[in-house]
Length: 136
Image (cartoon, rainbow, N blue to C red; front, top):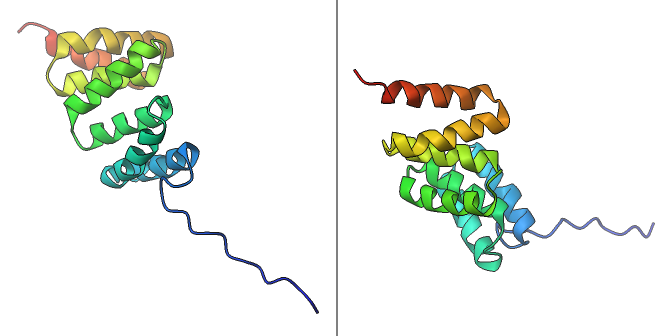
C-alpha cells in the first residue's frame, strides 16, 4: 500500500498564530488563574493588534487576578470609554475601583452594569458597596 503517513500538526506556541489563537490560549489560562502565562501570550498579540478589545479585556482580567488594580483600571476605563454598553468591562471597572477602596467611584459603574444585565452577581456587588458606604 502507498498510504501517506499522517503528519502531526505543527507546534504553535502561544501568540504565534494571531489574535484568535492568542485569545483562546489566554482565556484558557485565565480560567485556570494562570495570569502571568496569559499575559505572556497577550502582550505579543496586542503588539500586533493593539486595538483588539477582546485581547484588552483579557489583559484587564489578568491584571485583576494579579491584583494589579491600577493597570486593570486603566485598561478597563479605555474599554468602557470605547464601548459604554460593555457590561463585563463596566462591572470589572467597578470591581477594580472597589478593590482600591474607591467606593464612591465604583458604585455608578456597578449600578450601571446591574441595570444593563440584571445579573445577581452584579446586584450583590451594588448592595455590598452601598452597605459599605452607609454611615455608622
